[in-house]
Length: 445
RNA sequence: GGAGAGAUGGCCGAGUGGUCGAAGGCGCUCCCCUGCUAAGGGAGUAUAGGUAUAAAACGCCUAUCGAGGGUUCGAAUCCCUCUCUCUCCGCCA
Image (cartoon, rainbow, N blue to C red; front, side, top):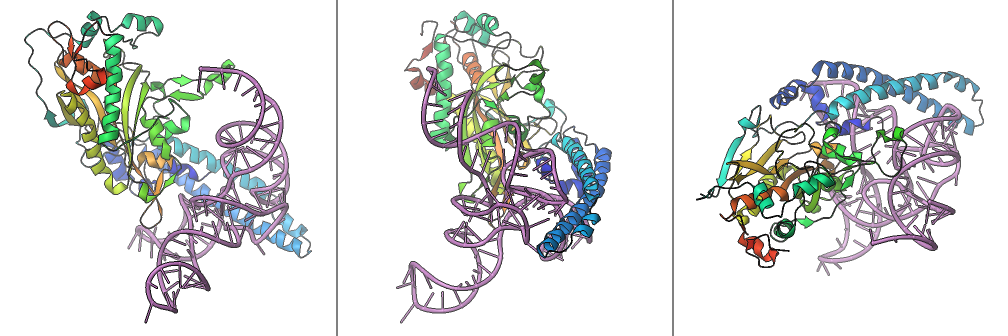
C-alpha cells in the first residue's frame, strides 16, 4: 500500500515531477498556488529514501531465499543468519521514514485542484465568466412582480416559520399544491432524462463514507461544507471521525459506483440519473441568499453523471449540458449558459458550464445547474478505469451536472409564471404530472 | 443482536511457512493447422511504483493474494483487529 498513494493525486505524478512549471502556471490560473519548493524537497527526499528502502528489501529477499535454499539442502544457515542480523531494524526504520514522507506528499497532492481546460476562459471571479448563449425572452409584467417567498407564503403553501421551528434557518416546508408541484417537477425531470436522453435511473445511498468523498474531491479539503453522521451511541472521544457524511450532491454516490473498478470498453459511455436530497452546511455563506429557497441546507436535485471514454468527454459535456437545458426549454423558462472562468470552476473540474435561469423578482439570472467535465481527476482518485482498445486499463473521464436543482426550478416557475392575483400558471409540460391542474392556488390539497 | 462460512489475477479456482506474482481452467492476443463451420497445436496475457532515458521500449528492482497491524531470516499460508459477502436464528419498515 505504501506505493499506492500517487494514485490519489490530481495529475500523473510523472507530470508533476517532470513539468512542474507548466502545471503550477496552469494552477495559478485558477488562483491556486502550488507549493513548489516544499514539493521539490519532499520529492528529493522521497527518491533517496525510496531507493534505499527498496535496496534493503531486495537484500532481505535474496538472503531469505538463500536461507530457504540452504535449509532444504540441510546446510548450516547460521552464517547467513548473521549476515542479516540487523537488517530487520534498518529496514523497518527506512520503511517508516518512507511512509511518513509519502503521507506528506499525499496530503499536499490531495488538496491540489484540477487543471483548467484550455477552453476554460481565464479569469479571477464570477465576473469573468463568459456568456455562451441565451434562450427565451424574459416575460414583461404589467404588474409588480412578487418574489417566490411572498408568492408562496401568501398562498399559504410555503412555511418557513414551521421549518425554522423544526430544524432552524435554511430549511423549508411546503404544503398542498406547492409540495405537489415540487414532486411533479422531480418526476418530470427524471422521465425526460431516462426516456428521452438515455440515462439509467439509479437509487443511491444518501449517507456515504470518506472514501467516496475523497474520490469525487469533496474531501479532504471541504469537510466544513458537509454534514457528518455518527452512528449509534458513542463516547464523546470517539466522535472525532464520523461514520458517514450526508451527500452534498448525488454526484458523490453515482460517480463512486465505478471506484476501484475496471469496466469493459463496451460499457461506455455510462449515463446515470438520480433524484436525491442534497445536504450542505453552507458554512461561509452567512448573509447570502438568506431569504427563500435559493440556498438551503437541504434541497432536492436531479443529477446527471456520465462516465466516458477520455476521447469523448468534451463531446459528452456539451451533450450533458444540452440534456439539462432541455428541461428549462420544456418548462419555457428563459435562461442563459455561462462558461465559468478558471477562477470560478470547482475543485475537480477542468471545464464547467453553469445554466442560469431568469428570476424576475431578482431581475437577474441565477444558477440552476452546473455541468462539469472532471476528465481523469476523479477517476484517478477513485482508481476508476476501463479496459481500452489495447486491453490496457486506462483512467475514465467523469462528468456531472444538475438536471436540474429542483428547489430553484420551483422558484423560477413561481416567479416567472405568476399572475397578478398571486396564483401560478403551471407550465403545460408539468400539467400531466399535476393531474391536469393548470393553475396553482391555495385550494389544492 | 447471536452462531457459523468465506474474501486469491479480467473471470472461475488451487495453494496452510521457503525459487509463489501465485497451479489449472475460462476469456483475450498472436502464430500454426484445418478448403467453410466446429475442433486442434504452440506462444503470450495482472497492477502500481522505483531505476535508467530527451522520452520510451527492453531490462533490473520493489510492492500488491479484502484492509491494517503482529510473529519470522522469510507470510497468500500462522496470530490479532477491522471491513465486506454468504448461510441459519432473532428483531424490524
